[in-house]
Image (tube, rainbow, N blue to C red; front, top):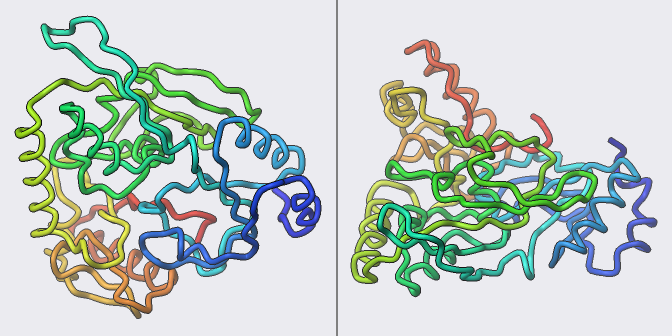
Length: 313
């Protein structure tokens, strides 16, 4: 893929909206690290996104879709190409319909744009007395990111609730796909990297507002008690290996509280790498590799990052 700098003037003439040039990705990441992206562009609807994707493809320029930035790590050297932020219609929520009776329980379909924050959708479900997404109340990602990584907590995964999605491929074609065809696995789906999720429809169950609220409060309290919610992090950093816990392995390896530069293994939860205030992406990557080496040395298990490292290391 070509670097954007040779086409910067062309892009400036082509795109009518605002372009952020050489802007640090630290402002778009919950880890608060990351070097500059060549360009950052916000799109507000499918037509704008289609137009931009086709232009970038024509000029062989790479692109990245970034939502809340809660599960990404951008190197200090930054990102080549264009970072695309989904705003406007991509942050909408809409109740569609009541579907047929399923197991004697009426289901309600809710459509949310890929740029909508998951906690915002959870709050909407509370207002509509809809159950199913309570586990997502403390997950700070966008709907798009949550589905691509099949986000989950407390034994639940978002993929199990997806009825249908609207997708765009790298040719700008838009088409629906049934949730059952997305190939959800632990912390991932099976679609190609260049497939863009535009919106998702969730199948939810009517319930008691008091019970739904109480469940959300319980999960929020568990997070406050057991996770470093007040410090910059990317959430759980490593995937849990089969039948084990990454946090348990890291703690047993004696790494809880261990730090490299401004990056530290949280004292509250060993599967969280936090930015103590002055961390660089290099600090976090170094700490990640140290954890992988020590856990492998002690237990013979190679921990795989749950966080997406953009642009390589």
